[in-house]
Length: 532
Ligand SMILES: Cc1cc2nc3c(=O)[nH]c(=O)nc-3n(C[C@H](O)[C@H](O)[C@H](O)COP(=O)(O)OP(=O)(O)OC[C@H]3O[C@@H](n4cnc5c(N)ncnc54)[C@H](O)[C@@H]3O)c2cc1C
Ligand code: SF4
Image 1 (cartoon, rainbow, N blue to C red):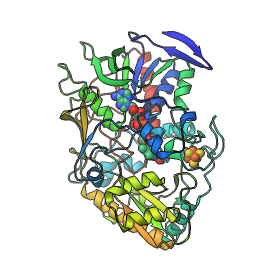
Image 2: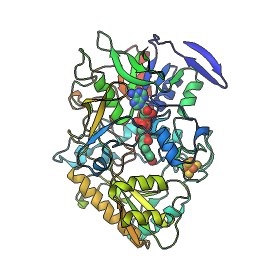
Image 3: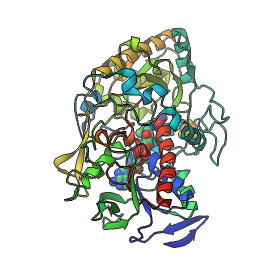
Image 4: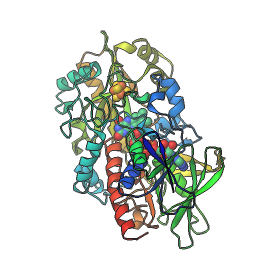
């Protein structure tokens, strides 16, 4: 290991054959947080990131340009009957390929998973066609880590951080919600600073959150966790380095990662432990692509569960157009919530709940994502009356099934020669019931606020990917234990939303961060005891 000072930051370079380091694949919410937490405990980390490092001063308020720079665009295939799959057969998910991962794109909504959602199988009972299970951890296990995650992210309405005042998009939404009788209506929990905090500026309400927040008000690992990890002198970030395969020794433990560096050369970084945080499509793909004579079905896959139970959230959007201007695009893109439908209410006829979340889209993104629904009156109205719109989306619990899964394409290869992922997603009957409930109630909400026309948005690539390497008490039922450690291989970890046993309704990132903080403690403890 060599130390060098680069400006104020201690840059460190680890030798490829340094097998004392933990190699983390992916620098987003899971990987970036884990890197910082491990470094603070004295552990050396090599962070492999497939995408480039685009710093905050390089962000531009141009959603088209930033979308092209940040989005994961490597080839993928989607199959199944879900509307988003039919509309976007080559890009079922919306993810970043950049240092900071999808936390550069995200909009910061941060609810916790609720107690009943951790006990999904017990609460909902057996639902035919699903693989529902209870999580092997409870809300009380995770509560202290949620506290630390909320403090780290600076979540509004926690730790003495004020809530935001409402913007116009929220005010229209809140008026309709209250007229409908909803009671849990507020501007929401966001990892966005309303006031300067923890070295980050206050939100200036310009409304380009998805393009990359130029003020740094929105938490992203790019300019929080990662530079802090580097400042310890124990973290080396390698951008444009794509992990191709995780390698094992004769005893079956992982001992390194084969990756393509920025020039496309193959390199092997030795490792004491490997943590995979490539998001829930690339994480199972890497484990499956790591098949060898020793592990013919891929790594950590003795249960056959790697890639299965892939979940998103049950999603949909409603746009409402009003006679008078709303200016929905002014202010944060995500700007408030109704929680009433997120509770357990079996009388609605479906399991699980959903959040109604205020949001707006930029004009380009809106036009592109509405196009698959067809050219016509609704489409023209939305574009023509952009400044008169208000909007909200749903984020609801998605049912896990054995066949909604990430697998490897039998013939198609990517630019590295690896099989591309195939993402299969069918709607479950529960998804239809929940989505229809939302469309009806969201339309009623905006009508109560005086909307003159409602447009439904049923198909867009999801930003929430979960569950393809799920956490289980019994090794037979999943891929990792309650700390994200592979059931099969003690020094192999899954450190992102792939661990989720069920999707719950909560936007996932706060939970990913809480799990990463908890996992870092566990890894440090095991390393101290020389367990691996
Ligand atoms: C537009 C948008 C809005 C969102 N809003 C919210 C929100 O309001 N609230 C919320 O909770 N969540 C939100 N999300 C989701 C949130 O961004 C993700 O849940 C979170 O970032 C996932 O963290 P992760 O660590 O699993 O993956 P990511 O943050 O996606 O990071 C994965 C990283 O791994 C890298 N990688 C993958 N494979 C490899 C490989 N083989 N080698 C090297 N590197 C690799 C990728 O390039 C990427 O940088 C949003 C997402 C989008 C797209
Ligand atoms: S509206 Fe706030 S959070 Fe969004 S990009 Fe602007 S400063 Fe960042």
